[in-house]
Amino acid sequence: MSALSRRQLLVSLLSAGLVAPRGALAAPALPLLGVWSDALDPAAYLVSEKYDGVRGVWDGTTLRSRTGRRFAAPPAFTAGWPSTPLDGELWLGRGRFEELSGIVRRERPAADAWRGVRYLVFECPDARGDFAERARAIRALVQRSGSPHLVAVEQSFVGDRAALQRRLADVLAQGGEGLALHRADAPYVIGRSDALVKLKPSLDAEATVVGHHAGRGKYAGHLGALDMRTPEGRRFLLGSGLTDALRRDPPPIGSVVTYRYRELTSRGLPRFATYWRLHAAP
Image 1 (cartoon, rainbow, N blue to C red):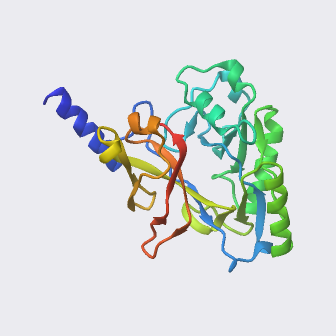
Image 2 (image 1 turned 90 degrees about the vertical axis):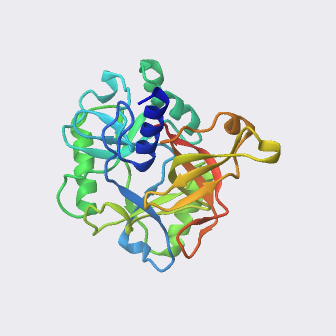
């Protein structure tokens, strides 16, 4: 088999999700955020800020991305962390996602750059009980660790829809992007469900790049659109929002990108989808 054929085979396997990128384990099965509906009762949920960060999974010894790739965090960053698996968000501060993304994607850790990063923990898969009990377990684990980089996400109840909207307005006024709501009585649930939802002024989601479509007209010789696959396996083309630089050097196949959209069609596809940013490299 030629080198080109081997490369084409590898790209096909990556696109199909049958192999993991180099340096990665298989992508972990995780809870995914659904979208808030007014049919839901906010009083049943614990509410937190939805942080503008990079999803990170701690397996008890190693910190990995949602695609399974190991983050090259300095040893001092995870010193004292528990052997218990954790799920959370690497975070540098509101409005600093691009800076954070550059730090965590480096293959060689920069200790100075990681010093300001925090790991905001919002799930503990192995803890017993419903989410309210798991949230208490998270607080205890973080307190015992003594790590300055490990933070338990603050969870609290709101009384009704009016209180929920006030909470959202307060977070937005401080530069946040929205809220995450987790049913207090929910078991640990993989995938999307009403157990974990987000509330934001505009909708966004992540999908994996599985192909590149050539451009036409003024984009001839460059990227026309990204062929995307959602976690549920749905395929769609994403062309709006791509800069000229991205069309010349598009996100590689296997990348996870974040896109914004207005609503879902009856087939579950995003309507008026627009590229926002790279979420995770392959």
